[in-house]
Image (cartoon, rainbow, N blue to C red; front, side):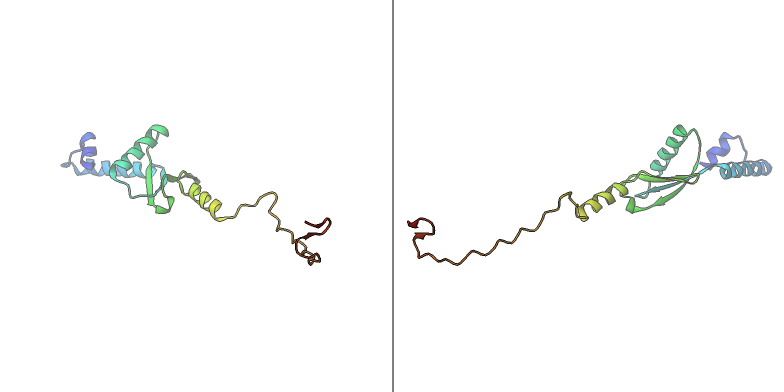
Length: 137
């Protein structure tokens, strides 16, 4: 890629002063680029980084340097930081909320009351087979 930049800029490797000027300009340009913190859940391949770079160039109409961090706890998606602002587009907050909902017992508006104790039955005073109010059965 570096050689392509040199070739496209018509810089000859045989001209040290032109090469030094090109390197100084390149260094200044790189140092002036904004830095976007990007945290993703997996180790990206070169193609993923290129797509991310192209997306930012098209959406934000800017070139930027990425400060890439891999954090598997994001589960999926990505988190970004830029100019002091942080945005989390990962799955982690949704997953944490689901876990919290499952682990924390739900409180209801009218919690169930314990069953009232039934008074004990009076001792049987009638002989077997005799109804207490009607006499014999």
